[in-house]
Amino acid sequence: MGSNRFIHGAAWALCLSLIAGCGSSAPPPLMDIAVIGFNDFHGQLEPPRQAVPVPAATGAAQVPAGGAAYFASAVAALKARHPHHAVVSAGDMVGASPLVSALFLDEPTVEAFNAIGIDFHAAGNHEFDRGWRELLRLQHGGCDKHTVREPCQISRPFAGAHFPILTANTLQEDGRPLLPATGLKRFTERGATVTVGFIGLTLRTMPTMVTPAGVAGLRFADEAETANALIPLLRAQGADVIVAVIHEGGSTTAPVTEPGCEGLSGDIVPILQRLSPEVDVVVSGHTHRAYICDYGRVDPARPFLLTSAGVYGTLLTEIRLAVDTRTRRVARKSARQVIVQGETFTGAQGRVELHPGFPVFAPDAGVAALVERYRAAAAPLVQRPVGQASGAFLRQQLPSGESVLGNLIADAQLAATRAPERGGAQISFMNPGGVRADLEPDGQGLVRYGQLFAVQPFGNSLEVRSYSGAQLREILEQQFDSGTNTVQRPRVLSVSEGFGYRYDLSRPRGERVSGLTLHGAPIAPGDTLRVVVSSYLASGGDNFTVFTEGRDAVGGGQDLDALEDYFRTHSPVAPPGAGRIVRAGS
Image 1 (cartoon, one colour):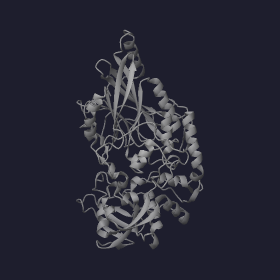
Image 2 (spheres, helix red, strand yellow):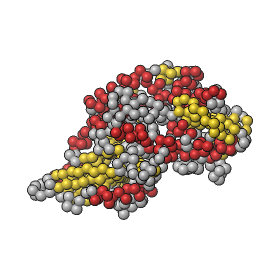
Image 3 (cartoon, rainbow, N blue to C red):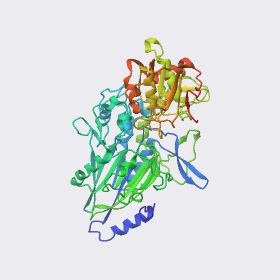
Image 4 (cartoon, one colour):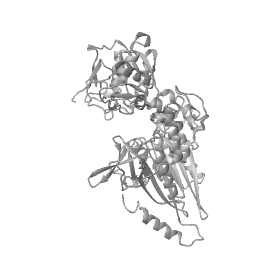
């Protein structure tokens, strides 16, 4: 980035101090306002055992980061640095969370951020994992039960979020937003007032990413069109600065801690290309990538500052706006990433050395006590052994697209529903997005319940349905040609033992899948097969709409229970082999 747009520390402070000293009785020409942004926290209350890569003389240094107590201290430090500030989250604060949060329906994460003090949160796709009614409970509080898990296990009653959750393009049947669309925050200094308007947006492809029943009755409008239509309303309410907080994102090839738009790509780009140039800042998320991009270098007609703070609370983005109090517009803007490096961080291999080139944050006592309260309540269940394993189960995709851990889950689902009285399943499929963590036994080969929970945190139920051989082939074709499932970005399902097929991405659409077999016998188009999948897939999740056409449904219990039962009855469990799916040319 050019130095004219990104002014650092001392130079910025000197500039502002000189301006402020000219005529103390008049309003200052510039007001310094900070937007503190983050995204995709995913209930990571405890340090997530991740590190942030930063440039170093010997390559890339790994800086340990994350954890709600350290995150709270980092936010407090940035607030103290900037008297005029707003803290905003670009989605997925909750959902796909570790057990210490998910076991309690993410109530502890909401309570932690109440304590941290954020101003606005834009709903992401994972806020809808348990349905829109549960999202409203997280906002408004209460103990109404909308899921298989019990609400208010610790907090009775649960008070809800003290900050507004914004969903401008999430519309009900009557056209009204499900939750507030926008928010305002005003700042006053020496008689001058500047108002910042915030627009909260989630990705419009939401219905393809969550259980359809969870968003039934809702419509997700175009992100850019929604934001553009709201800007005149915000201006009428006095907004001088416009910030779009959106749960959609992209990636760049620039280093994490250095501004740059190099290689900018992803689903955020078509939105930016249609977004009004009146927007000053776009705080984004969803892709779990960190970037700071002066989009004016890509499109001079749209000089947004585009940011994303990675994932799991390992980073905060400090966005600095110098607002001219006479024109009431942003005169300069800059940003930097702040690594949330905690003083007692412990990594996957034990104690990790702290990086001396970045600040180190002490844990916030209040947030640490809250996390410990929930951790202690969850600990007996987390540590309970469930079985033995003879190796690691990784979710990393194999050349065929399947994964060892995905295959294991498919096998467990099949074992849980194979009996006639449980549905008579013959085949199982597992979507890669439903596998949230690797599964590695300890030194004695033990696997514990907390690990299984981290792998499958969604609480989906299993469903067994009948499909024809032709429908199975259609389902498999949808891996490469349905919504966001494309040849360039396929979503390959892992499959259970005994089932196999091959695919060739060079073939035309509808002709890529062939050779379906079950225990070596070919599957004909007219054959009828009993198939078990999660309730998420059964209702058409991840763009697999043909799953909704299944007949003679039989419920099969909870997905996590099936995985636990498999370890209990098959220990020691060995990682399943590859080769169930064959990709031509691999």
